[in-house]
Amino acid sequence: MSSEAERSSGVEHAAPPLLHVVLHEPEIPNNTGNIGRTCVATHCALHLIRPLGFDTSEKACRRAGLDYWPRLRPTEHDSFEAYLRGCFGGDGCDARQRVWLFTTRRGAPVFDARFEPGDHLIFGKEAGGLPTDVLDRFPDRCLRFPMAEGERSLNLATAVCAAVYEALRQFAANGRVGVSADARLIVGGASAGANSPATTTVHSASA
Image (cartoon, rainbow, N blue to C red; front, side, top):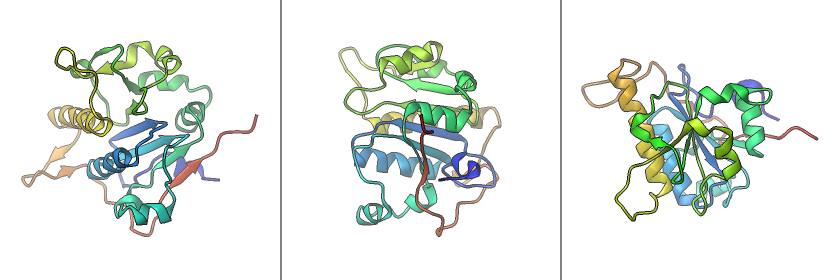
């Protein structure tokens, strides 16, 4: 079982992750792989809530050519409740001011959100999005992307990337992060070592 220190973040930097990207029951491995690369490139942590539609073992990651996966070190949670307990403790009440839920069904435009470092950006599975009961728990924290009339949704990896970079744009504008002359993020941290274990797992508590 993972230690509390391991549970707190997927990406190990001297500074905490800028954001936590949370995928609820993702189904398509290529999407999650692309999202993982985005997280590594932007100093974000990745959380995966089971069940997953693919294998995240070290062997499977090597076979898929995910050479950045050891630097990412995603955290896996047995359920949404386990995720809330592992990240926020207790009944997850503290999550109410730190989570943003992305959906096509309700919520304000993403540009209206005011993101803070350490926020959790939660996305649903490709086929059905986030469950209604999850959305109902955080009704004032739902966001959506503006789209042309008649269009249904964005690809999951595209949506995650758009949300992360909107948050980074805000952080750069208010001095929370820096951007160097060669377009590198300045957050005061270093990448995790290549010998770090590939995946941290959070198990749900016994009933």
